[in-house]
Amino acid sequence: MHMMKKGSILLMTTFLLAACGGTLEQGAETDSVVESQSEIVESVESSEEVVSSEVETSEVESNTQMNEDEAALIERALTTIASVTGYTEEEGYMYIIEPVEGDVVTVNIREDNEEVANMVGMFKYDDATENVQEMDMLTGEYVDFPAE
Image (tube, rainbow, N blue to C red; front, side, top):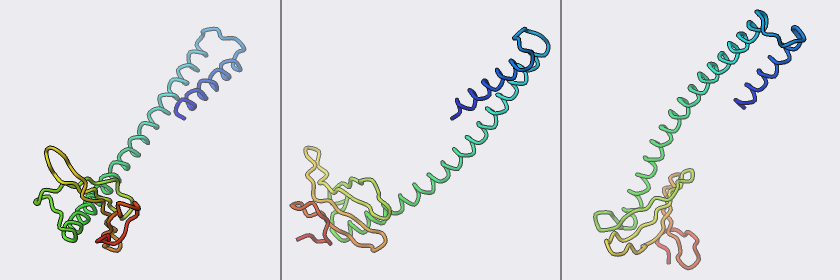
């Protein structure tokens, strides 16, 4: 879109030059038109930089808030899953956090071993209901903890 604006300005300037004198002789009038075109392009670029800067700042503030909220959600999920299942980092388990989807955090719990990290289970925590579900390894579906 940025390139389209520059292209449009350049095209309009070309038409303006052709309409002004019918020739493209280098003279005082064409010099002033070219200077005007340069000033317009610089003005457009300057305006776009300001708008772009404002958008980037807004996105950073939004992402920071989202990251803080998401971090708090993950912390609640880990605390709840550890208390319900008994699988804690202190007892030799590691948590692998899957991408968060809304209010639901999916956690892959594995044994924290140097040689091999066997999977203990996959758990989902729903923040809205504070419910913990475990994946049934045979069906792949999540059921309320403990899965039978």
